[in-house]
Image (cartoon, rainbow, N blue to C red; front, side, top):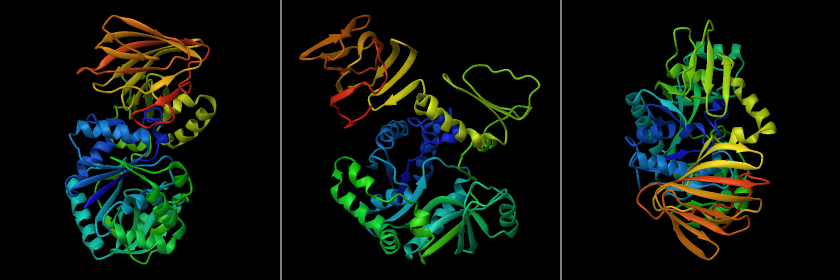
Length: 443
C-alpha cells in the first residue's frame, strides 16, 4: 500500500506560527517534530512507500524533514499551482499501477491512538481491495461546526453533510451515527480514476493531458498551463458524494486537524489560569485568564480562547497591508539552506545566509541593489561574471548591481555569511535567475 501525502494548504489559522512558505504541516510543534514528519512515521507502519504531492517550496521542506527521519526513496509530484484535492490525487494515481491500494492522507493532521489507527487502516484496505472508495469517519467528541459530517449505517454511507450550524451539530452528535469527515481515503488507484472519469470527466481528461505532458524526472513535474487548465475541486465534491462505491470506516483514533490555536491548546500544555503561551522568550501574564499568546520574532498574536478561528480574518487584512508577514518568518528555508533577515530598513537589508554543504544558489543578478558578503565560517566559492574565486572565513567580497553572480559551498561544513544589501530597493523579487539547480522561476 502506498501513502499519498497531500502537502497543500497554508494553515492561515495558525498564523504567525504558520506562514505561506512555512505552513503548519512543517512547523515543529510536537517533540521537535512536525505534523508532516508524524504523518510519515505513523503511516510507515502500514504503507511501504510515500508519494508526496506538493508545490516546489514545500518539496524542499519535505526533503529536509524526510532526511531528518532518514526516510529516502520516496516519490514526489510537484504542482505549480494548487487545484484542490481531486486533481492532486488523480495525478498521483495516474503514476501508479491501477491495482495499487493507496492511502490518501493530509500532511497536517494529528492522530494519537496508533493502534486504533492501524486497525482502521487495515479495515479500509480490506474494503478497498473489494473495489470500494473508503473514507474515514471520525467519532465526534463535541458539536463542531467547522467540519463536514458523514451520516452512516455501519460502513454504509447514507449521506455527506456540509458544515452545520450549532444546533444541527449537536443533533448529529446526539444521533451517534454521524462522523466528522477526516479527509483521509483508501482505494485502488484505478477504482478512483474510473469513478472520477464517470462523475467528473472534465477533471479526469485535463489531468490525463497534464500527466501526459509532465516532465518525468527524479520527480514528476506538472506544467503550469496544464495544471491551470484542470478544474479546481475537492475529492468529496468530484467523486465521493456522487459515487455508488463509497464506504466509511468509523474511527476513534484520537484525531485532530490542529486547525486553530484552540485545537492546538487541547494538545499542548496550558498554565494554571488556562492561558496558552508559545514564545522563545519569557512571557509573564498577570490576572488574565483564557488567553492565547503566540510570540514570534516579527509578530505577536493575542486572542481570547474560543476566538482563534478569527485569525484567518487577521491574515486577510495583513495580506493587503504587509504581505511579507503572511509569507515568511524572519528565517526563510530554501532548497540550498536558509537566510535570516537581521535588519530591514529603507535603503539597506542585513541577512545571515547559511548554505548547506554541496549546494549553491542560482546564477542571478539584481537591478536595484549592491551586495556585500562577509564569510563567518566555511569557504565560499563565488562567481562574479566570468571570474570564480574563493572567499574564506573573515574575508569579504562585493557584487555590484547588474553583475551576474553565484554563491556555492563546495565544502563539507555549512557556509555561513553575512550579506549587506544596499540600494534603492531590496525586495526579494528583485532577482533574475539565469540558471538554477532547482528549476525555480520565482524567488
